[in-house]
Length: 396
Ligand code: SAH
Figure 1 (spheres, helix red, strand yellow):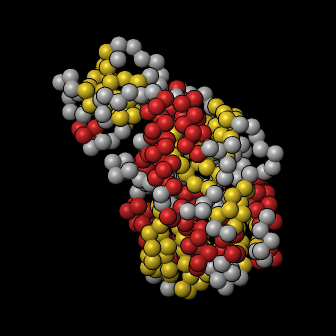
Figure 2 (cartoon, protein in one colour):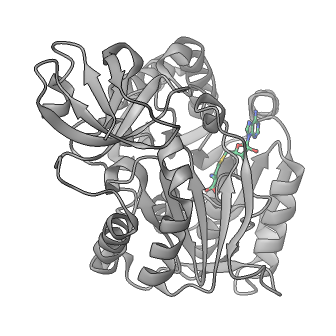
Figure 3 (cartoon, helix red, strand yellow):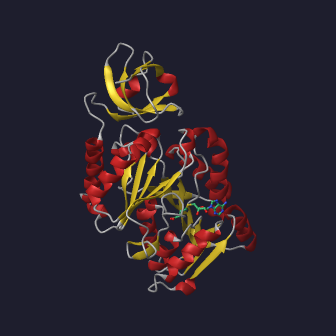
C-alpha cells in the first residue's frame, strides 16, 4: 500500500487520535495514490500509525479512517461504522420517537467527511471529502442496510468540496423522489423538509432540543425569532402558548416554507404569527427606533466565521446583533443566542455576548449553555465537532 510519511514530530496529534493530517505534516508519499485512495500513515521512524484517505488538493491532506493499521478499508468497514453510528442513536432514549435525526456526524462517528440526516424514510447524505466521495456506493449500501429507508438523496454541494477539488454532486442515489412533500414530526410540530432545495441537508436538525426549550419558555410571551429559516423556533413557541411571534429571515423561499409549516399545524394559533422578509441587522435597528420590545428573543444567525481567519469580522457581527437583542428585551426577558461558527469558541462567544450586554447597559445572567442535540455528538479527540454553541441569558 502507498505510504504517507509524516515529518518528525508530526505524529503527536495522531497519538491524541485527531483524525486530520495537514499539508505541512507530510514529508512525502511512497508510491502513488489517487484522490480518496487509502494510504498507510507512517511516522518519520517508519512505524505504521493509521490508515487514511488521501486528498491531494486539500490542506487537510489525509483523513484517518482507522488508528488500527491492520484495518482493511472496504465495503465491510463502512457497513460496520455506519451500523455502529445508527445503533448508537437507536440506543439513546433522548432520541426515541424522533423522525428527524442526524445518523452520521462525520469525524465524531469515525467517518470523516460524511453527514447523513434522516427524515422519516428518507436520508439526505452529504459527502464533503475525497475519501467518502470514493466510497459513495459502500456508504449508501451501508445506510440502506442499517436503516431500511426507502430513499437516499445525495446533497454533496457544500462549498467545502471545492477545497478538496471535488465537483458538486446531487441526486437520488437510492430509491426515487417521493410523490408527496417530505415532512417530519418534531416534538409535536410538523415541519417540512426540502432535501433538494433547502439549506444544508434540508433542515437544521441541530437546534431540535433548543426549539423545545423555546416552547417551554414561551407561554404568554412576545417572541422575536431572528434568522427564522422555516420557522422551527416560532412554531415551537406558538405550541408553548406564545402571545405573539415575529419571525425574520432575509430569504423569501425560507419564509414560504415557514408559512407552509404553520399551515400544516392547525393546532397552532396562526393569528399570533407574523413573518417579515428583511435583513435582521436593519430590522432590529428599526424596531429600536419604534420602541418595540420583546420577552423572548432568538438569535440564530448563519455561520459568520467559517474559519478562525474570519473570527474578527464575525465577532463584530455577533456583537452587533446581540447588542440590538439586549436593547429590544423587556426587563426579565430571555435572549437565546447562538453561534454556529467553527472559528468562534464558546469562551469567545460568551465574551462577545457579555460585551454586548455591557454596551446595552443591561445586567444579565447565563441560565444555561446550549449546544446541538445528542445526534450531533462531539468526539473527545475532535473538538472541532463543537460548532454550535449558545447561551440562554436573562436580562434584568
Ligand atoms: N433558526 C433556524 C435556522 C437558521 S439558519 C431553524 O431553527 O431552522 C440561518 C438563517 O439566516 C437562514 O435562513 C438565512 O436565510 C438567514 N439569514 C442570513 N443572513 C441574514 C440576514 N442578514 N438577515 C436575515 N436573515 C438572514
